[in-house]
Image (cartoon, rainbow, N blue to C red):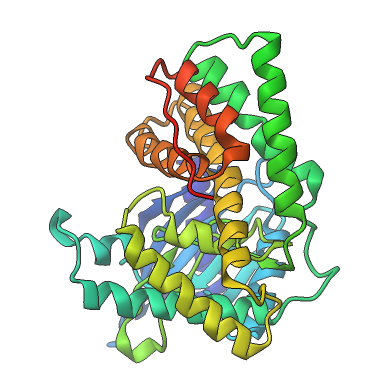
Length: 349
């Protein structure tokens, strides 16, 4: 409440004489909060009402500067991101343009029923086009590297939070060795990929359906953790989304369309689609292990239980990929053991 009062004071300073109301817009998995501001114009005037977004990022918890840096990179790449209208970095406030409140997830699941295939097809092709624009602007040194240290740290969330904390399973030394070897194999494939700008959470909750007058979809948010890393990572986030599932035949079609267009655009994708698809699958294994750990941590450490319902879909993606590659068989067997499931077999590649 105290910070909300401070935000209102700041808004009066930067928009003197205007009347406005403030309401919660959204919150994410970090300590950032967002408010939607309804400006009614100058007091006593008949000005047109407008809406803006205030990002509230407490400086002791969050740093706005990475967000601002990535915002400029994406904006210059032609990605539709919020405009920065005013800022107070000392107190952690940003005033942003409002890209609306309809996420891709909401548009794809209206009233809980999945959108038609044609509606989804259009939205996903738009998202893939925006991703190609983002990746085409890539250059080394502009963003932190998605290096071995960071990828490894993310993988460790799985044993620490999902296995030990969430499943309450203590791994034996032999099981930890199986996991270590699996992680080494995964990292070797991930780190051999071509490198581009990576949003890191390019999925249906962070893509917004824009009003037709505002330009091309999607609006892109929550990009402050962007890095320079494996090319397939954002494709996994989008097509193996933790919050909505599509038939694999459909996601494969979208992946092929991306690959064809990315090659024509000059992105460093593999010339062989089979190799490209293997990169994508193994990158998915890294992300799914990480996400299982993150969702468990959000519940056990932060008291956020809303992500627990999404664990089964993420685990399903993980199992599907592990079941296809003989080298990942020991990891799948270990997963079956810690989740107390019957051991599965069957490799495709």
